[in-house]
Length: 107
Image (cartoon, rainbow, N blue to C red):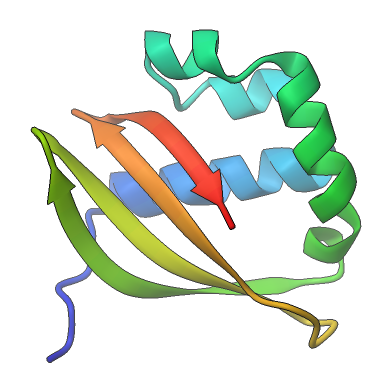
């Protein structure tokens, strides 16, 4: 079964998050989030993740959509994040609240 593609807004939000992480731009990172996202992800938390991922993201990456799950009233979009360097891949979980991101978790 092939998952239905998410909306263009959802895809754009993920790209903004990844591009902000690659460029270590916290202000850009917060533009796609709701109030809880902005309050819950501090500059220090963002900086810690950016420090780990920025150089790999800058060298190139691709995303593969896995699908959507629902928890409570929120859709959670799942993506595989692969890097051009051929190293370890990650799964990104992005929770939406309407047209804004409520949370992002990359493992």
